[in-house]
Image (cartoon, rainbow, N blue to C red; front, side, top):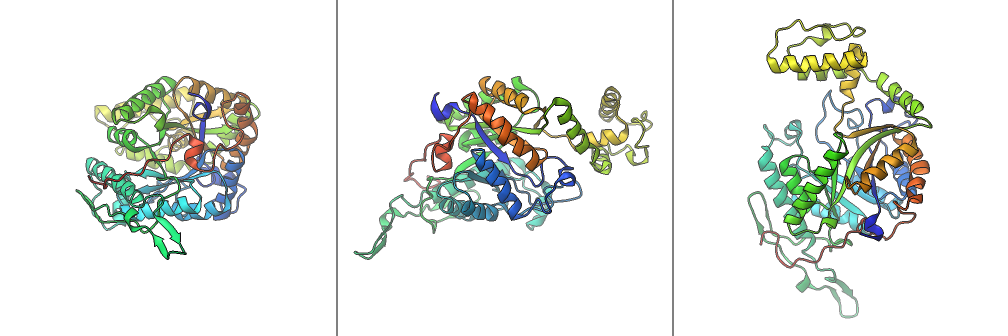
Length: 443
């Protein structure tokens, strides 16, 4: 590859004050969930020429929820506002295929694409959280396989609705008095297992043809959905570079099996990070964040993993006690694993609980800007990813260091852009606009 497709893609996952449970306690922001705050972070990402910002979404909260998702603006509403205050950076958000309807999503992201002049992206999720069903009048959560069948049909209907208008259907010929060419606006007449949608969409074709499609393919069904439809894939990589390379090749080959080009799928690796002038300073910053975690959060999580153990009765300031309860073989093995980990790290129960509360499937980097740039280069050149989904532990502070320190290093290595290549998100990601499909969504 050459040119734009031979350069690293970098997105920013914006999550309140940061991707650590305690980031809000160190934040200087009065309200790290406000529109003004999110605009500040987005503009900072645009200053660094990042490809896009991303906002996740959840539909259920409880006492175990991450502090930075308990209070969050609805992301597509937020994107609409950000679109008017930014110029080139892409704007991505999550929307569930289980608790939405295709017509609403097609119209919503199509509208954002028009408002932003072609910078929108939809992160397709089926919603794994069982609690979400209770907020949408369901007694039980939809079974995994059924959710993914629904998701496939959902995406097909959405794409069909985006294709229900040809590019030149809206003509506005004032002299002849012709507003649209009805011969170029089509019903999709979809009839499927989950949806019956006639169409057409009451919105002209988005500037990008289709907003960019994103998916986080983890399970077998998720990987298949990603390989079939996703143009950007979010990956959790905390098992090392070799595991990441194997996933990368497997997903690219799955995409080829669906008659897609490997370069049509951009795989980004999630990376949580905290940066300092030296390794020790970065570690001190991380240790401070860890020390601010409420240990009760970790104790509750441990109680879910090992419900027969009374962790609340143990002394927080002492190492994990010898096992007194009689547990089955699997539970005993889990307990002894935590005990061995605590002894190796010389952690008391409070520190262990704080570690458990901060566990994430995403890679964690603690170090200097130079070290982070080197790691990103190694992973990229090794074929472990096409780029990265940044997850700063302390959002503003770490992002500013990344933009001012890491980005220039990557630019010097000719691995990242110095200016945006185009106007649309597709142009900047090196993706083409999809061709107009004359077939209906279910034909």
